[in-house]
Length: 438
Image 1: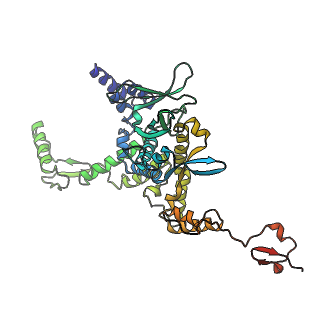
Image 2 (image 1 turned 135 degrees about the horizontal axis):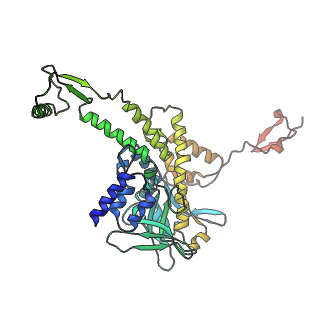
């Protein structure tokens, strides 16, 4: 039976290689046919003929770098659980969830590993999932355990209230269904990317299959070119006709045996001519086409090429601007997803009512830029936004005596106080404006 399915699957892929997508292929995974699911959604051929899956796509340096820079950037940022109460916001250090998100979501991994992993799942496959372990009675979240995206199937109930449900299928275990119920804590943390139905996010590997397939084909052609010693495809022109097939096969076998090493130059004799029939690497524009593919892939991830190491169009003046735009247009999207999905999925209704929320600390992104960091601290101190001890705390330093006071500049005054006062008559004494008669 399995051979019949495999044969039918092969014929279907050959006849209509591009008719499958992750939605239709998902039926096989939901029903336990993980091999067929991987063949359909994880390895369909692109127009270039190259199969594209998460594994093959990650073999491209641009895909690896885009995924890495996004997921690691999210991972290095501190994630705080906060509470807004009485108009004041403070860290919820007394909650178990604070430590779980600040340091380690479980005994198996750190917070950086956890956030990197789920962000990577969401960036590449459109969805990141984690099981939430809660305290019995109160329902407070205590730990998180990541789930493989291909094993979790979000859907809606077919009848009744049409509630959102998550079916988790793990090997050698019975299926588990988790239902999202109004007014009750949820058991699945779901980070979803751009999607079409509000339930699942698109897989960028599937959506970018043609671009990635072209890039994989280029990598293969370049590798084959060097594997053959840079030898361009050729034909041999023999001055005489072969006596019979046996004579031809003998000549071909001898040639292959002698010059099977692509780095060994052929020696032509008896009027034998060597004629090129393929294109050189320069004529085929292999380098140019690969340079075009890099920004093409970056567009799928909303990452500027300079961020992943392409400095061909970088200048001293635009690198800093592009880095700021990466934070603004790429990173903030993923950080906002984390903060809002944590609030939606993780907090209990009581915790939401009590004003708990989540916020990332972007200070880690400025840690490497000493000058910008110091200028920012100076501005915060001068406007009275932060005290000296608060700034020292941001730098990981201990507080000092008298460092809790806030200071402001005193050489400014309201505009209305300046009416009728000439510039020559303005005198500042003790920070207050005095009027002198003209």
